[in-house]
Image (cartoon, rainbow, N blue to C red; front, side, top):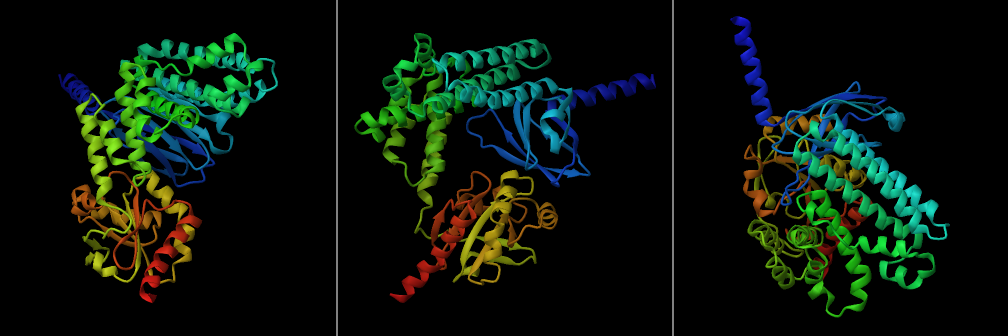
Length: 474
């Protein structure tokens, strides 16, 4: 009876874990050089942004538990090698490899390993596809050989997905098929550039002698997108990039008022089910990567073409947020707490140039940025005109441990255990991490989204210092 009772408890615990969406990823990296693996978590939800997680590595061993609700993509980097795969609730994956001999040593075991192995074969596809493209350049009809070889590789990976389908959820099968289609279509498009170094229309016009009828038919297929994969974020993102590049390279040069018409032209390229997701990702990309360059009326009109009200509202909110903060605008006031427990305000730094950085302990991109701009902090470390103000959204204990553990340099404050609900997060339009700004000595934005490149960033900070000096001299 006691044994039966314990068995029931174990079963209930296992069911609870599966419902909670727990996934365990662990492993061992021989010859590990870094103390951490940087993991990027990519949800299939189009409105979400990739999230970074720092996975500690001790004596080459690492272990981390993820909580998810659906099939989700993980990408790992140890600073030298990259690997990843899809996970779904209940998976428990073991990864082993030698950092110095990654290609020959990587191994996946445990529940869910098939999805990692298949994604690994897609990464191999990218590498082999580049070799195929270079080799095809000297052929009579280079695209015939190139496309045939890539199609053969695609068929082999597709067969692996079908063979493993019973061991994974339908969601994961769809995500893998979408990722495969994206990988192949992008590789073929890159192959055109490798072989001819020219745009699509120019290849058709200027390189006809190297195109067979089969080549032309294959090229035309590159402009046809599979609407059955509309629910795959990877495929939607690939179509967004490929269609946008095609419009820029081939349609813009021969189209008047292109900026006003480009979103409508994009819609016209796409099958029905892909129109809203691809347009949404395009608008989101344009607003978040070049916020000061987008035409508000054009983007607002394009948002009206979205048939999903949630996606439409998200774009309008991004557009409104973009207008709240701009170069030359007064930086919003704030009140946060420093390591000594003292209140810190924007006015506390009046007369100084502030490099403002929002982060959290398990944010992989945040730590990558810290590492990237170390030379800039070193350059200004004795310059009391400059402050590197880091704002953590972690709780106090995690925040203080992370500063010590990772050796983060700067003037440290945190959001007083209000995490991402602190007013500073909304007033500074923090939708992704890291989010950074440069504020000049009089409290105005000098740079929104400053450069990650250390040389360019140093120049931007120096310009912020000089801009105030120039005003005072007039």
